Amino acid sequence: MKAAIIKAPGEVPVYADFGKPAARAGYRLVEVTASALSHVARARASGTHYSSLATFPFVAGVDGTGRLENGQRVYFFKPEAPFGSLAEFSIAHESNCAELPDALDDVNAAAIAIPGMSSWAALVERGGFAAGETLLINGATGTSGRLAVRIAKHLGAGKIIATGRREAALQSMKLAGADVTISLEQDDEALSRAFESQCAEGVDVVLDYLWGTSARALLIAAAKASPDDHPVRFVQIGSISGADIQLPAAVLRSAAITLSGSGIGSVPLPRLLHAMQEVFNAAVAAGLQTETEVVPLADIGRHWRNADSSRRTVFVPRP
Image (cartoon, rainbow, N blue to C red):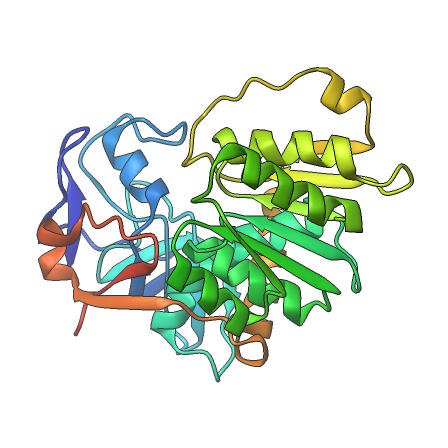
């Protein structure tokens, strides 16, 4: 079969022949139809991710969509090494396969799977979100943040506050369901005032995709301005604005702020897969979709380093 093969750490995948996997007890052979390029897939290929393989060669890709031997359409996650999802065929444990609704096409399912699961799990599993609550999404203009706006709207959010840097993207958040937008392209004092104004009205859950200076400002604002009887559940998801912050200890002592993280290590895999299934089930009704660029798998070498946060690259083995 044809596949995107990693031959050494850090190398761009090579489109070449690789042995086809064989089905066995407890595992499902999948004829792949679509697989989205992800940060995790690139990190595993570079050898920097904790789940990176120590032996080479292997097939790149951590998830995708396809068909089982009985024709059933599925999403599959965490293929069995050395097979990945960026190939004509892959193999995954049956517990890591989720049935796709008929109304959800393979490319969109592959594109929204990981960012949608990330947002749903952070909101529900870690944030304990309930209908009617106020949600602030820090970094809402990326793929995950935009999906989080629609997911929160679908789950009955009372108010959604979205932050971001691009004005046009922030305006699109209002069309997606955000009630308030806050630009991160303002000075520190103005940003702090904007955060304090919203926290004073009561913010229940924060989904933070950025970390860095905006997260620090938001935590301090929550401590200063939140009503005494209004706890804030702050869920940290991504760190594209910086891996570290200096946070005064008094922030966590002076207010009812719960600080937690959401990811593969903090949410059990079965619950992550449950969140994934919930995303698929809600996709059509909630309008969960993202801009995609569909690329033939044979062209993976030219597109491997695509890093547009507003558009997902989805590889298809058979264009």
